[in-house]
Image (cartoon, rainbow, N blue to C red; front, side):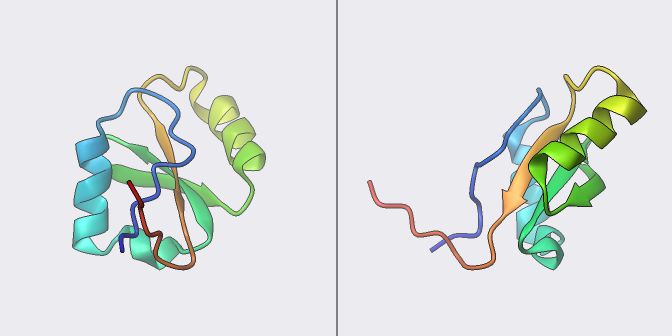
Length: 80
């Protein structure tokens, strides 16, 4: 099982930056939240995706270098 959800990705930030944050345990502090990541750093969070998206657009305008990642409450089992 993994905590990486891959849900809600928006922008061009590398997925390896997200994996580093998961590996460090940093994202696990935000279970149940959408977190915005830019340049390998968490810049904002919210329980509602659209509220977060609107706030980010107001603050940053273009979101091409921001990833929004959902951190699930429980581990997600990937079945292939």
